[in-house]
Image 1 (cartoon, rainbow, N blue to C red):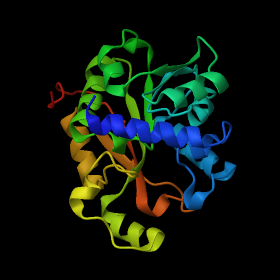
Image 2: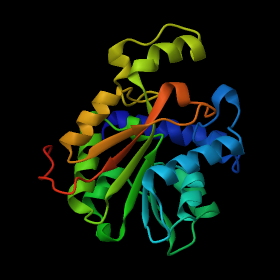
Image 3: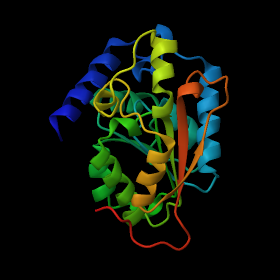
Image 4: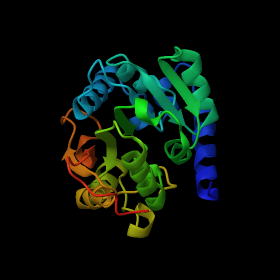
Length: 247
């Protein structure tokens, strides 16, 4: 694991431990303006994920960068369950304490790339999600995760990448929300900051295509607090496709 990822994990760990043990949304920094989002916002997220993944009762879900499992558990309730994976010890501890019900709903402490490249139960998963965290993977790591999902998970035909920062709206975000000048491009392209990598919709499309996926882009309803500055991507496996381009 690179030093930047170790530092990022420490940031998440320290922040989560500073929050109330039951304030699940603040623990994962889902607290704009210093307050945890309400149930209405959580319901919008859950509905967006369920719709994007086309979750059904037969599905088995893998949640990459699952955090404390608060969102994951609600998605598990719509299907047969599955596994959540995260590299932050305290967040996985919270997930196990509050949401784990073995064997159907399991939470595992692991780096997501290590997990998707080495797990021996890849065949059981049918859907994959990564909500609010894909931007915190470096460019090379993000590509390797997508390639591993394409090559090693034969029954996964749909991957949902949620709450991606929109590079084309970064300037608006800084001026309208933060009240300041936007970061320079090289800072917006860093994975180890509070916001992660800002990508355009075209960049996500190219990244997905290079890893063997087709990306369908969507946005949350306007009442969602992050709707003006973020977008979602649903990746689908082409019915006839060659091996992923990237190694």
